[in-house]
Amino acid sequence: MSQEAGNAIFVLWPPLPDPIPLKIQFPFSNTFRITQKGDVTSVWLNGRLVVDAARMQNYWDPKAALPAKGPIQLQTHGGEIRWRNIWVKSL
Image 1 (cartoon, rainbow, N blue to C red):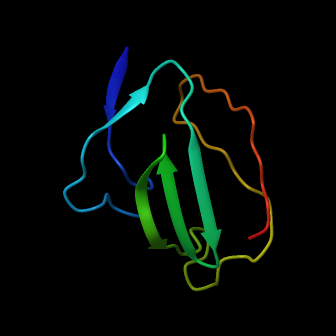
Image 2: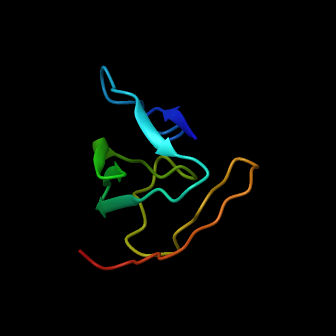
């Protein structure tokens, strides 16, 4: 079973122009690669770039810079979700 997916960072960044629908594997495993360099974020979903060098802002205090260090946060929108094999490394 598969379902179509867009490519955006919820609330903070719109989809790429003319996005090609992605096939996400539901309920099976999907892979994400996320890079954060300063305030610039890129995201790959199942090996495909879906967010290209998005400039992020501090969601909690838009006038402040993004913190250089701190916890990561994993989010769900109410459904069951599981994470595994999470790696964090300095770039």
